[in-house]
Image 1: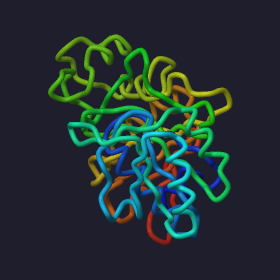
Image 2: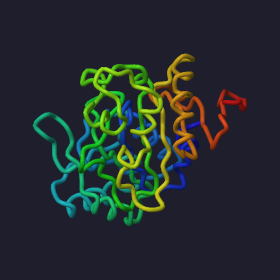
Image 3: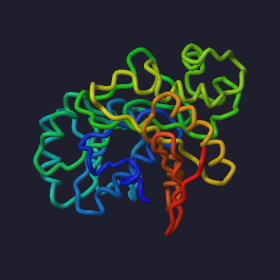
Image 4: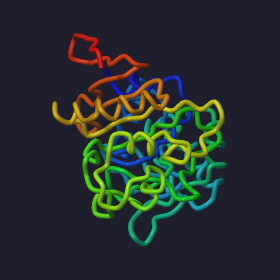
Length: 269
C-alpha cells in the first residue's frame, strides 16, 4: 500500500502537514506518488522549510510576489509534475513560504491537481506542539496530516528531545523530565490545542505515526494509535516514510489492519 491510498489523498485537493518526526519526507513522498499518475502537484509551506533534494521535486520556483509565482507556475504546468514554490531563500538557507490566501488561489488554478502544504516547523525533533499563531493551516485545506515520530515515546520531556517542551507540558500535564506517554502524544497530535488547531470546519484529520522502521517500533506505534482511537481518530497510518514501502499499518476505527506484501490481516488490538 502506498501513502496515497493510506491517506486517501487522491480525493483531496489541498493537504496540510503538521507536527514532527519526518513530515517533510512524508510530504514529498506523497507528492511523488501522486505525480506518478500524471497529476501536477504543487508543494509549498506557510512557514519555512529546507530546500528539497533533486529526487523530491522536479522544479523549485522562488518568486517574491503572488503574481510572479502564478506566472512561473503556469510556465511549468504540463512539463513538470512536482513543483515546489517559495517566496525567498532565508539567511539560514531555508525556503520562506506563501500565505494561506495564496494557497487558496493555487487550489483554483487550472492544471494544478494537488497542493501539499507544510504548516509548521519542528526543529527536526520527533514531537512538537504549536505556539499561539501555529499551525498555519489554510482555510481551503481538505485534509490535515498530523505527524509524530514514534521515537518520541518514552523520551524525557525536555528541549534535547522535543520541540517546545513547555507547550507540550501545558497541553498534556507532563512535567519537565517526565517520560512522554502515548496519551500525551495523542493529545498533542489531535487535541483541540494541538497540531490540528485551527483546522477549517469539515476538514478531515489523519494522524501518521512515523519512523516505524522495525517490529519494536511498530509495537510502540500501536500504543499511540490506541490512544488516538480513544481520542476520536477515524483513520490512523503507521509509517516508515524513509523506506521504499512506507505504509506499515492502517487503523480504521477500532480495527487494526496490518498491510503486508500480497496479504492483509486483521488483528485484535
